[in-house]
Length: 577
Image 1 (cartoon, helix red, strand yellow):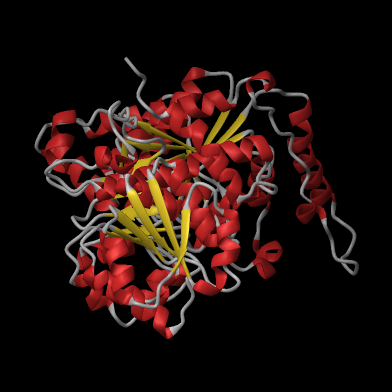
Image 2 (image 1 turned 30 degrees about the vertical axis):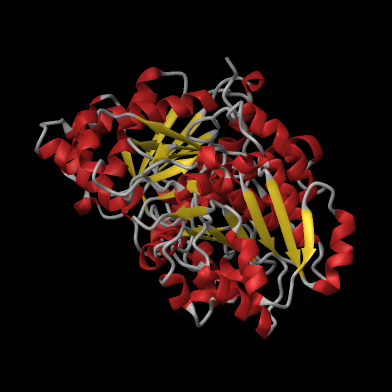
């Protein structure tokens, strides 16, 4: 897992490194700029390395004239010719053009330093633009601006405000038109406007700068720390946000790079060491709940004991299915078996039992008895239970779910209608002492908690719920968040949009339940429910990635996820002696 840090934590870590350990803030800034400059340089490599410089196109906005406008003056014709020359010179001068947008803060200082480093390296034309109020520049940024000037560069003012496009043509002077025309010919742009400190919607000239980095199709952007306009903690888009090709983030990843809409704006994320003392980082974070992103499992699955029998690998009870939802229980059962469950008992309503039974070979379906005690006895003989996939919301069904939650002392995974049954009865969850995992999508989470959609701050919402109700919460979606009762959480970085089909959640629920039920995976003396649930989420996403590569995102099905599990789990199982 890759450790993450919130914006507040990173500010505190930087402060302690400088004030308590004597780290040079200018040296930290220089190191950050070096990493950003390297990313820019890689994007400027020849076409065979994956990048082809983009030729500019002459903007029709600049030359368009109203029908009733008087003929252009000689001066206007000269200006149009000069603007055209800026664009057409791109066809004769192969020198890469780089624009660096710098805000009034230390993130802007990173950008100023990056511009100088690129300029000193040579072989490219670099222009650095200051956006905002120069009175708000930090001392370190001013120092970097002086170094840029000493190296022969200049920090130019960027003052174009496109907030009101209706008056733009009337208010934009010729120098601003020249600037926008030059920007249209750039090969790479650097976003160093805000960093992790942004907490309000992007506006004014900052918004114009962001729009410039958005609108230059084919021109890649390297973002410093986090794309401007993305909330570092939540991934929320604050009005407008930069679309980065590469995000170079410092010391630790930020939650907003992997969750919410921010995950799709970050591009390739590179976490770089800029010189913060490692022992200070360890000292500060060791006592805090774990906050991580999972790109692959923490460790491989252990070899299964040679002398084990099927009961050692978990007796799993699945209560699922209803009229019209006969696929969900079968998908969950098959996924559980593919994830290693030894025995899977599949209890379904009597009226759908014949349909489910003919679909099952390895799982053992049975019609749910009307006697509650018979169901309870069956469940108590198992190592884990999964309740909810396609179960329906009939009153008697919800009563069954709540009764089992109250009476069972084995790990329970609640999915879909199992979660819906808790709405208005959260006290039943609070009274449980055995591990409980909830796997809602945002709609189910909203019904359960009453929070508005879309959920603002998915990660913090998941962590708060898990803490308050002493459970593990798997909040599904892009960057699925798996949160533990102690506040630990991880964001999943595997999987993709091809998995957004009915049935994928049933597969995940079966996988989580299967891992919870296997005795050799449970940690003695400690509850590792969170780790097992997070591993299942990661494997689920890895299976989705494999299916996308083999079948494409349009054609892949939840059944394909199940069929991909053997390859994934074989790769992530320890080798034999």
